[in-house]
Image (cartoon, rainbow, N blue to C red; front, side, top):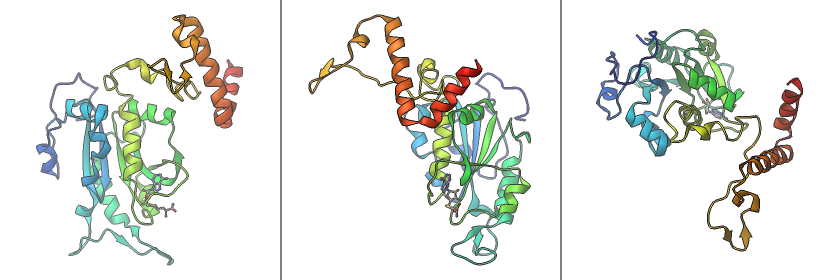
Length: 270
Ligand code: SAH
């Protein structure tokens, strides 16, 4: 059903769902809108921060859809076990392949298999660090499935079996994948059409051109003896653009030599 070309918003998709609760929320599931399926032990943590501000408004309007898939529902036995101790010994518990696999199998229903059209991502400190280029690609997909780990993580075999990409929020360890999933969804959703009030703001911002953003100011013109740079009040757009570009370059060089190197290389290539 989701394999059809994107339609204009407005048609409600009726799909079978293991969780009828999803049909009772006040957020419409609109066919053709970008959709994220989140596999988590803690569905109550969603939409979390995504329910506020612009992402929350967009969710209510149906500009994107959220479905949580509760991992516990796939637990095994009387106690609905989802984890067991690591093979080979060591601390903590590992999410079981048979449990996570069943959830991924369900998430796969009705979604394209092609990883560019529908990426399947495990949030993990071992993953590729999240970048603007990466989330831009995600925003161009029809939707995606996110797997949030807990404890020591998930059985490696399930990642291989379902061709799961690993994505990291940064070089630190969180207790679970939910915060990273919400960061990824936020960064992706704000790039979808009509989510930001001003479409320009996603063009002219940090990383969009390989540089960090220039400093920003607003009224009052003087605060605690600090003035807004004259050029920004001059009304001369050419000079403003030039100043901003210079500031962006200086800041990037100083704070992110890694980004600066890439920027210089890309300029040389033309
Ligand atoms: N033992 C693992 C860490 C497990 S932390 C290791 O050393 O690599 C528990 C869960 O939190 C992970 O399964 C993952 O889903 C999530 N997580 C932790 N740090 C993360 C990060 N930097 N980015 C994305 N997800 C992270």
